[in-house]
Length: 416
Figure 1 (cartoon, one colour):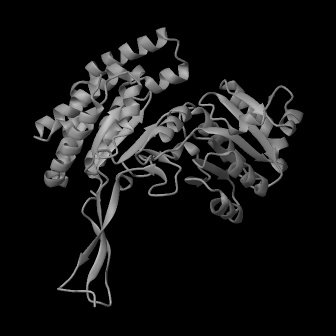
Figure 2 (cartoon, rainbow, N blue to C red):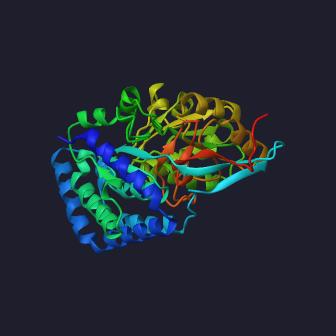
Figure 3 (tube, rainbow, N blue to C red):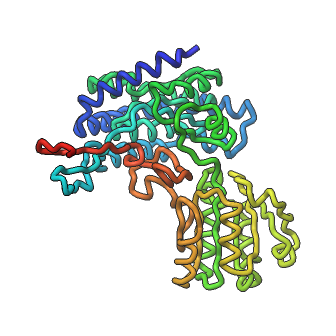
């Protein structure tokens, strides 16, 4: 069984070593080396992933779960590209900002510094191993990774590449640690190492995240689920509305920024909704609708109250016809998860009302919820999405993995 206490101490020590030597140049060299390792070992990685997929099929995992687990040429290229993009990003560590001269004569400002050692607990997606490790490295943090057991072989292959890259650049390999035990009690042990781990980031289903929050002595950065909405306003461009609604649900339904509920104003529902539902159903989407929806389209399955709270992560969509924008906003703030919500409208006043009153980490106008992503926001990659309001909110990139300390520059100043 993994000795979690020793692993945390070793990562903590490696982090402090890296504080001394972790220049931007060295960080970027490590990231370039990681990218090269992945490219050179792509065949090995595909073989390892096939073992995980074969085991998953035998275990009866759903198609949606297997999709999250799978690595193909495109996703592997995405990991390589993420490394290169993070290299190009400005290193936030050491930057001093908001420096001002106080009346007493001294200067005071804030300096960006790493958080420390970050524990990341995640489930199916093996590319999280690279996203998490590279962002932590560029932001100067140590990291302890604990991936899901279904991605065991894929994760072990990737971690080997990460550690080889550290070794090649003469950096303590314990800066990136991996909990390879499948025993869930190891996670519980990880969550009490509050002297050597500074932040926990769980990435996965709501059950995992709630369990981590309940057990952790360490601060947890989280989002429980992604109940995302697309709202078609009565003054929407209808062609645009159809394109965005389909993309938000169908493009990749098993991820947290996929739409789970479609809201549509009653003023345009009769004209627009039947054809839109046909397009969804042609793509295999099960529609669960309110009473007004069923009156227009009798073949639709009735939606329950619970359906509007649900993160389906599948080809299922809840639909509700609303009176107006006020009811749409009220619905989103009640049933949503404060993740990502979108309005489709050509009315500037309606767009501003939506932006100002929807209480979510990402609020969009005339854009798919699928764009809620650290890479697409220009962060290079993301460590996760936070629906918390303290420290970080929404997709978290490099800056979200740093904190600040006050810097005071004086010339013999004392307090009288």
